[in-house]
Each structure stands twice: as structure tokens, then as C-alpha cells.
Amino acid sequence: MANPVLNTKTFSQKADELEPGWADRSIPPAPDEVSPWPPPGSAAVDAMTIRGVTSATGVLLTLLVASAVVGWLSVSVTHDALGNASVDLPGGLFIGLIVALGLALVTFWKPTLARITAPLYALSEVFVVGAISHVYEADYQGIVLQAVGLTVAVFAIMLVLFATGRIVVTDKLRTGIIAATGAVMITYVLSIVVNLFGGDIPFIHDSGTFGILFSLAVVGIAASNLLLDFDFCQRAVAAKAPRQMEWFAAFGLMITLVWLYLELLRLLAKLNRR
Image 1: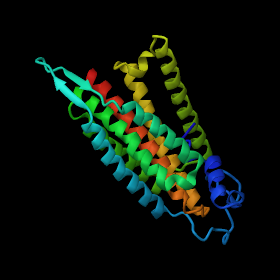
Image 2: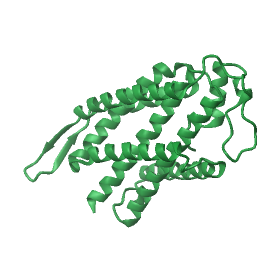
Image 3: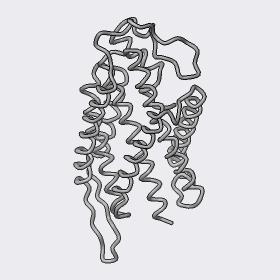
Image 4: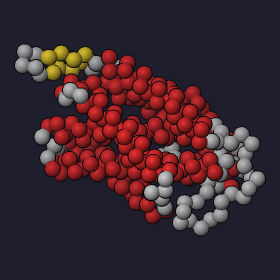
């Protein structure tokens, strides 16, 4: 259960919808896979490029910041005489979540629409993220700036490690990251189910040692997913995937970055509560 967008099987299926027969060439293998790379000359004329993915990702991140600011301003925070914060969330928060989920599903099933749906997803989802960020900031001043800075730093570090070959995404590493991501997702789903029955899984929200170690582990897993995203984009470009998939790939990268930011925000909040 790594990034549901940027995985070989899904991406190949969606790319084949755009250019019939592309999936037969497939995405180039990971370093320890034995299947051959697509032969020279088999590329699509209008092919996906790293520059195109970078450009699309930049547009989505710009929209992400703009939407986050609006979400932030939609939250009303007041303080009592003792300095305790009281937060009033916007009424459209839940609607924003539903719209974001719907747009994510549309983008996943109809990648040809990603140029339209991915920006709309960024606007709706990050409106919610901006509101959540303001709630954290109300309790811990400066935490949002710290989380943003750490997200940028982690992204840059992982990109450098990947680009310089310090970390090579092998099939074994990929399997390990996918398994770890799946474990985190299952844990979060179980937490939601337990909460519905009035219970709690303490180490997820606890600010004690185990709670902090759990958050550190999840941050590490989220950061590792960036490696999978970088590797997949590189291999898809090498396989000359259709250009329309640039926005689909950028959408997947944005999902990982938002997840990483939220996990860093949670970790910093735990550290502040100690």
C-alpha cells in the first residue's frame, strides 16, 4: 500500500488507456529486476519528461499554498484570560474532505483528467490541511513553520540521496517500504474503528516515548515513499510514458508530500506536549 497512484501496475494500466499498447512495453525494471528495458525507438512521440513532471508539481504546490492560506484564514481562534485557545472550525471543512476524496478517485480512475482534477484536488484538500494547521498553531505557536521547513528539508535530502545514487531503489527496498506503509494504513484504520467504539490506541496520539517513536517511524516511512515516487517517475520517463501522465505523476507526489507534512506536524505536537 505505497502511493496508490505511483505504482507500476496502476500507472501502466492508466498510461495504456491514453496510448493503447504502451503497457506492453512496460515501465523499466528496478535495479535488481531482470526484465529488459523497452527497446530504443519504441517511445511515444509525445512522451512524459522529468521537466514536465516538475512543472506540473510546481503548479500543484503553488495552488496548495494558496488553498492552505484560505483554509488557515477560515479558522477562528480566540483566547481566554488564561491564554487558552478556543478554535472555531469552518462549516465547510467536512464538505472539503468529501470533495477532495471524490476528486482523488476521479483522478485515479481517469488520469486523462488529471490536468483538471489534480489542481482542484489541491485546492480542496489543502483547504482542509490549512485549517488543521491553524488548529495546531493555536496550541503550539511556530509549529506550522517548523513542519513546513522540515517537509522541504526532507524532500530535498531524499531527492539528493536518490539523484546521487546514495540510495538505490531496489525491488527489496520497494517491497519493504510498501509493507511498512501498508502496516501504517492498517494501524490508522484500526484506530478509527476503535475510536468509533469509544476506545483508543494510545501510542498513535500519546506524547510519551512510544508515541514519539511511532511518529518518527511513520515520518521515516512517508519520507521513504518519496524515494519510490522519484524512482517511478524516472522509470516512467525512461519508458516514454504518454505526456498526459505528467499531471498524474505530480498528483501522486503531492499526496506523499501532504502526508509527510501532516505526520511531521503530529510529531512536533507530541514533542511540544512533553
